[in-house]
Each structure stands twice: as C-alpha cells, then as structure tokens.
Length: 265
Image (cartoon, rainbow, N blue to C red; front, side, top):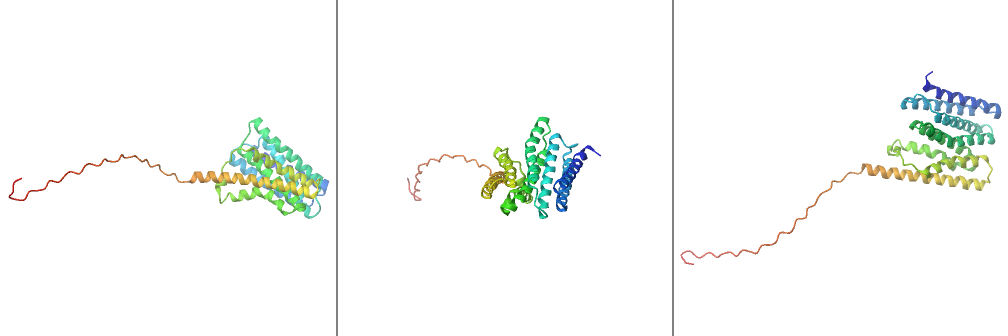
C-alpha cells in the first residue's frame, strides 16, 4: 500500500471501529451503521482524490488530527441517524462532539508548528467543521424546530451556489470575526444538544448563533461581489483635454470702393 493511501484507509478502519464500539455500548442500529459507513466511504474517496490532486505523499500530522475529528463527527452522525429507531444516547453524542470541538483548536497549531500548512489541510479542516455542525443541527432541530437546519446547511448552500457563480470561490481576506462565528456554532449546538438549558434559553442561544452566521456569510458574499464587480468592470480610457486659448478677434479690414470705369481717382 502506498503512503498516500495509508491515511484514507486508516480513517476508514477507525470509523468502522468507532461504529463497532457504539454498537457495543449504546446499541447502535442498522440505520446508524448505514450512515456511518456511508460517511466513512465518502471521506475515504474525498481524501484519496484530494491527495492525488495535491501531489502530497500522504497525510501530515495536522491532517491526522483532522481525520480524528472527522471520524468523531461520523460517530455523531451515526447516532443522530439512529434516532429514527430509538432516542440517541445524549451523553455519548455530546461527548463525541465535545472532543471533536476541542481538537478543532489543535490541528491548526500542529500544522503551523510542523510547517505542514497546506490547501488540502485547510479544506479538510473546513469540511470537518461543516459536517459536525450539520449533524448537530439535525439533532437539535428535533427539539427546537426545523429552522435550526439553516445553521448546518448554510455552508453547503454556499458551496452549491458557487457552481453557477464561480466568483464565490475567490479567496477571502483573513477575519477573526469569521473564525469566531464559525467556532461558536459547534459549541452552541453541543450545548443545546445536551439539554442543559430551558427551551426558551436554548432557542435564544441557537437563534443568536444563526443570526451571527447569517451576518458572517452575508458580509463575505458582499465583499466577494464587490471584488468581482471591480474585476470585471470595463476600464474607461482616459481622454486628455488640452485647453486651447481663445483666438483674439482681428479688426475688420475696410474694403476699398472701386472707381467707375473711365474716371480718375
């Protein structure tokens, strides 16, 4: 097995191992297994394609941390999917999500310290965050309402819109506000999933998080649109105007009268 395949295969094996553990401890059913295995296969294919396109020889240290986060997110998704059969074990679900959220603060530091920052790693990190938030939003929507799904779906709607509107794929300037809003979503959803807050307080908390996320996406889209319009706007040629001084009027020249023929002047 080539080194580039070791990472995706390890993720596949780890996901199956986590599903087996959840089956033994929580009684994970067939629907949960179906969701977990589908997630594992999707991650395997995406990583394999990403490594081939990037030319990387394998996963770096930070990528392995992100892979662990994605595996935990797969476990959360399996537990959420299995709620069609039985209530989810809230303590286990929240514990998996909490560990994944803590590791979110680790992989970036590892990448910077080891000098392994890459476009593939950044994209993998972003997709791991997005999938965990989607799984948590589906679970919380069961108690607070379907509007919570907007938190989990917003990233994917943005991605779908970038197909017909490629200017949405342009790089964005760094923003601490964007990072703070994104990090808040998972924490807020995990707290709401834990059921430790009264229903009105949980609704207010998640609603505030959704409002912040909508503001963040809206601000970025507006910046991308302005940048796109500036890039495609036609450049008007500058026309140089030279001031021409007025020509002074000359006095009229008197016209001499001709003498009649045969006369003397």
